[in-house]
Length: 197
Image (cartoon, rainbow, N blue to C red):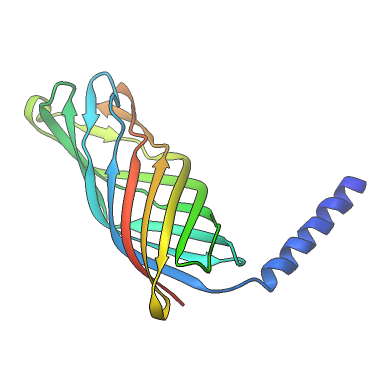
């Protein structure tokens, strides 16, 4: 009973804190590069890809923000280990993170964050040595962590750079037969322009 009362009291305090929290928003837009780790799989590897990306972050307090990352689809070439291109696939990695801003009112405002990611794969195609085969990549759910900084400019404008790690592991099937997990686990580098509202 004591534990339940403690949990209830903590929940009420959190709720009241959120109710009076700063409700400002930060919107950032720019480009991101998804750089998969090397040695993705014994048979295939996945190339880098860059695309338009944007984030929307709601400040829950002076230093705590809830951020959503979205992007225009990334298209990755898939190669046999050794270099020959054998296919491609598109993916979207929507990600939700809680960010902690150390110095939100400073010109240089660093932050760290952690959250979850759900990566969706589609439009898989094959070519070269695998031409005519059917490639399927499963969707992936994983954790993510990031570091970044804003450079606050006048009139609530800002410049942003971030690097985030995303745990992405997809099961690859060729003509219905599994060829194992492809551990993409990329670093994602983003450069953006943003504005506070």
